[in-house]
Image 1 (cartoon, rainbow, N blue to C red):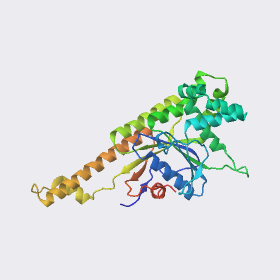
Image 2 (image 1 turned 45 degrees about the vertical axis):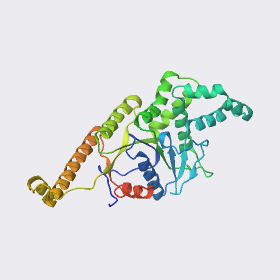
Image 3 (image 1 turned 180 degrees about the vertical axis):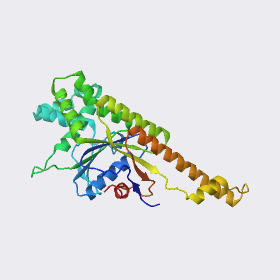
Image 4 (image 1 turned 135 degrees about the vertical axis):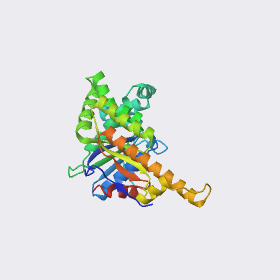
Length: 306
């Protein structure tokens, strides 16, 4: 099957900054994230892929240091506990005391029970990646792609600094929340991924509405993944709707297959229009791919997004 991407809306896909990629589980969010990272590398941009939530590789990592992937971009599996341990080291600075705190049962229980704390430190660590510079004072990564948890958990993560700052406006975590809010508003992009199915499209639209209500952030890019490339010619559509054939014959089987393809195409077009209207932007359409490796997805995304 040909690898193809269609860009709607006539807008260039801007990959600079930090991109949070979100969507319902099973829509291809991780594949899109890897494709975006690979596309940024092809464009000559230093790139980091951050995997969190269900995208983490097992076992859970204990380091926040990225490593070079075979695809050319850097990647890190970011786990909240590792990010919190690093934050304690930055705040306390005294190594013996840090070790005692991290090994403490009270610390572990506090971290597990404190509402919003894991999400806050994860965002704080991603912001630190976005600000990291090389020896020549240039940004280490011009593009950071964050493969987020599925929609509900992803929304909770993005909402956390706003809720934390409203609840407590003083102290180290309030200061961290304020810095994260400024960064989210000024230097990040929200990317939504859906597939042409009822639940995925509805959830994407609902996510957008709740994101705006809770944070004021708005999606800037949307992908409609796994679109079937089964468009019928005008003659074929006429045959499907008007011709008849004897039940059980080969002609009848062919007509039934064509009719199913025609109905799927019409339904997917309906979902495409519904998503575009609900989000207020035209999604990039990604056809079904036999090869979903990062380079193939990068080609699919980038063909019309130059």
